[in-house]
Image (cartoon, rainbow, N blue to C red):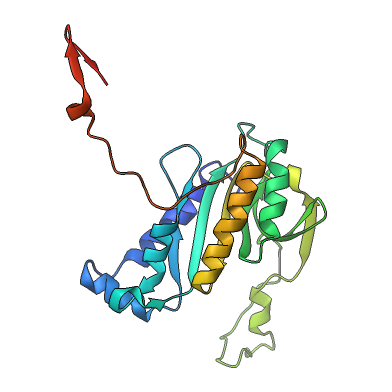
Length: 231
């Protein structure tokens, strides 16, 4: 299927809902300690997504007073441009920089007509896998050792052909992925993304903050003047 503007957000929200199943309250906290990987989805309602360090730490820690750290996967859906076909050129240097960070696990994105998984870069070109690569159908049962009764192995279900194209040819709707195995990986990621934001202050692809600001009580701060509410 073709890649759409809603693609990354649908994918990331579906994954977040899937991982959230299984209970609430203390049950969630207890089950989190049993997970080998936790997920932090940075998906604000419109605008540039914000990565909150406190939320990332909350997702990755468990146990007594958050003493235990679990490897953390961070997904950041973004829309980088209004053009329905290609990413805005002003974001290309940042995308290439993000792909070069040690914590990057790639980008779920697309090009006109298809979705792709971007796994790295070389110069100004991106390296990607195309899940639409056609292969012969496989019959039979896959055994635990990977062999099949018709001679084909489980490897036929994986894609090994790496393609490349100019980063500027990406669809503007995509999702950035980062993996933080330890707390220091998260702190290092924030430092790198912060430096990137300072380098591109007017076109930053992601916003950083320690924690969300408390919601304002607009009713308490408003003044009624001749029937109009002034804030």
